[in-house]
Structure formats: C-alpha cells, structure tokens
Length: 361
Image (cartoon, rainbow, N blue to C red; front, side):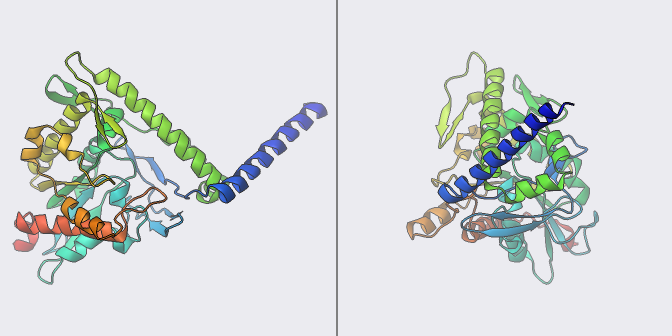
C-alpha cells in the first residue's frame, strides 16, 4: 500500500474522529440525550433475550439506574431453581421494557413490588421477571413456551400496551390464516447478529454506555427502521375488507393488527392454561391516560378483561402526581410502577388466581 494512500486513509479517519467528537460535544451542550444501551442477544428459541450476567446503567436527566441480569436472563440479583420451593407460589411476568423495569431500581419495579405485596409468612411468592425490551405478545408467548414454563409458574401475567400491535405484526412469529392463528417465521432477531459482533469489542461497549451522540443516532435509526418494518407488515396482512387504520396516540393501528393481537392473547391464555397455570393480562396505560386495549375485539375484552391501573392513574394525575418520567424513554416512575403492582395484587386476590398453587397443599 502506497504512502499516499495510507495518508489519505489516516486523514479520513482523523476527520471522522473529529466529526464524532464535535457531534458528541454539540449534543451534550445543546440537546442532552439519555444514555440507554440495550443489552440483548439472540436465544436458542429464535427470539431476543437479555444478555445473561450483564451489568449496565441507564442515565437520563431524571434517573441513574444500574441493571443486573442473572445467569438465566432475568432482571434479578439471584437465580431461580426450576423447581418451586415448598409452600411457595410462583408468578411469571412477561413484557417489554416496562416489565424489565427500565428507569427503575430493582426494588421499585412492579415485579418486586408485586412480590412484596403478595408474600406472607404462610405463602411466600416469587415473581420471575422475563421482561425483554421491545417484546410484543408474540415474543412473550414464544418466551413462555421455550423458557418460562420450565419454571412451573402457578400464574402467568402477560403485559399489553399499544406498541404490541406493531410488534406482533412486525415479528411475524404468528399469522392469521382466515380466522386461525398459525405459526409464522421461526426466528425474529432484528439486528442481533450485528449487535453480538459489536458487543465483543470493549471500545463499542464504551461507546454505547457513554456516548450521547451514538445513543441518539441509534434510537433514531432504530425507531425509523421499526416503523418501516411495521408499515410493510401491515400492507402484507391487509385484506380487501379492511377499513382504514385507527389512531391511538402516536400509533396508526390496522384492522389486521387488531385481529392478530386478539388471537395471540387468546392463544397465549389457552397455552398457559393447558400447562395447568392461571393466566391474566395487564394493560400499560398510554401516557395520555387512555387504553389501547379497548381497540381489541369485543370477544377478547370479555374473555380477558385486563388488569388495569387506569382509574388510579387518572386520580393520581388529577392531584399532580407523576406516573411517567418526562425524559429518557418515559417509563413508569416508582409511583406508576407501585400503582401497577397494586392493581395486579388486587385482581390476583379478588379472583383467587393463586388459590390452587403449591402453597395451598
């Protein structure tokens, strides 16, 4: 390689480095960004999972939180044996970044708050947190079938929120053949191969953990990419009989997405009950304090009425209390998570969803 070519390469590299440094300084001074790296990887079941034994932090203008993932891919400080301890009830929690507890210390997550609310001396309760950022109903179901049921939960709680309409169609793990839900593609691992290769490099991990400009660029590119995939999947699933899309906050939801999501929830219920466990869904309210669950088919709402903190959220908001953070990814505050956990605990006790667990034997 000639010295002139090496010189040009060196100048291009120096210019790229200088541009990146200027961009970093500009973002930090003019438009500070949250540092919210995603520590996810591929799993043998063909979907994403949390990187086992990972420790990382999220820093926003409102929070500085450290996450620890156990060796089983759950957000927890300890591992769980597959066999439930004697006289203990076990709950498996499936969902996305709300469930894993982004922007919350471990003790403030609704998984740990629920555990504390339900446990009593004669009936300890374990809540296993299988949340993974970005998951929809389809991935939650695959995670339960491939991993969650190995832990023999007595009750499965599966999250619902407005993003699930897009997530379920984009994942393609299941599809509707007429009125029948059938398997779709075997895997859904968006960007995982690239992420896994990059995460081997310490320099990349330093970048994703500390660069505001990189986090800004990644979030913008990732969001637009997901929107394009969702749009493509909507067009593929649309039928001639479909009407227009339904607006729900920032989301445009198609009739095909509504049908698919409803079928997935009912199928998840049937799979869990077929394994001898109880099943319930819980609804994450929109930030404008409305519910996207109301868009689902009437039969789904009647057969699976969701656990919802919406009434308590509205009452708290009327008194000026903050339920969602206003910066970062705008997840629950500790108050919001506590109200979610209390709504869960109330329904569990009211409907006796743990009445048949091992603690009663």
